[in-house]
Length: 176
Image (cartoon, rainbow, N blue to C red; front, side, top):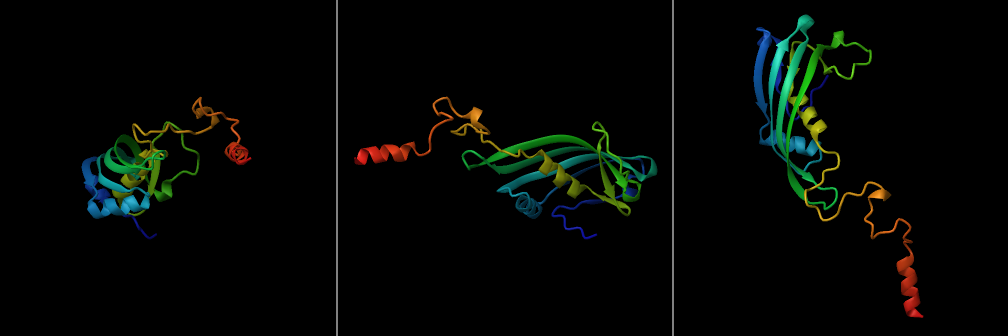
């Protein structure tokens, strides 16, 4: 398996030998730029995450993360770039790949992340959590037009039945 992660921070299981281990990881400027390209963002100014790791039975690792990021997003309404601060807490469970169950996970259970060998990659997990935290339809505060998702969101001055050819009809009547 080839690891092509733009932001990789591998932690060896032996570092978690006391059953509890805390670490903070932070992406450097190049890693932020590479991740911004991967996620189609104008820029990632800051990305860091604090992890509390606990070694459980059968080499399972419980990870509680606190993600902090500052990204530049593009407004879907005005198409302007704007800064967006992200702070998310999450919980994951790293499980050896050969111990992953194929059954459906319970909704309240932490996500299970398979790993191989004797290390886990907190950088890639942080990248994935950042992506999951991004607003799919970023909307800059104060954008001049409201976000229109369906016909019911149209302003009252605009009729749902407006004929797109009405302008042409008015031009035709002016010529005659």
